[in-house]
Image (cartoon, rainbow, N blue to C red):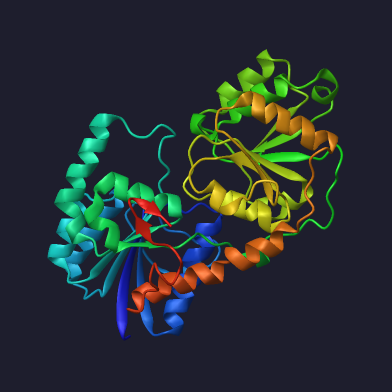
Length: 376
């Protein structure tokens, strides 16, 4: 092998939750092998579903991923050319330790959403200090959206500007079934997300409660996903007498064949980084109604492939729902074609691979330049 790289992912491998990142891991590993590059994967747990048996996985089990990797590095002294992290906290002592034990280039991928009103002042100061102490051990920061790139500079300071690349998440279109026609009047709706407060499903429930009685009596929204906020949401639905409007479907490993059964997806989230569920919905030719947070507006063009409203603006969501349900607002675009051009998994894999091979695309070439803490 000409190169060997390590990829650390604080990402639990679950057969009932196979998403866009799973497909990325499989395709990235395949791309590397085709080019004589070995990948050692460090996950919290082993897996036997999908293409995971083809990956060389070192699971941490009871240890955290970082500690397991450092132990492995000390014991094996593997000559990694690159260490890549996904879903790990950035600018921590781990990166100093990894750099001291290895001559590898360290690449961190930031998938983390930020609070809608930003971090508390004390946390902002803490992040700036961490950036000052530990960002020097990181060679490249990868943001999964322009929004993320800007937030990285806010978090860790201006000195990291020149280390930032933007690689949008991409999706494996072949796995997603496409909707061929769309109802203009009385469309069907789904929402698909982890059920926690920051996903804003409580706003959607309140918005439905405010609809005119004729619409409220007929509209149905299927909620896919599970999480710690489910009971609170079910209680809210019961309290408002909306049991006929909301069906809690639980988690599903078949969402890629489910999106196409609906006309619109609703995602009233309060915080987002760059949503794979939005891309998957668009790939199924299902437009998305979502909020103006995170990287949502990089995927959704208002009135073209979906509708944007201000996060937590329940009356605005109520108005949008009524207009879409009655057909006064409607979508004509085949959103799958647009996603294929802008957010394919192949494009994402190729851009990550270019960094590993020492030929990273430039921010200028990708038409993203950070100026005054903003991506242009």
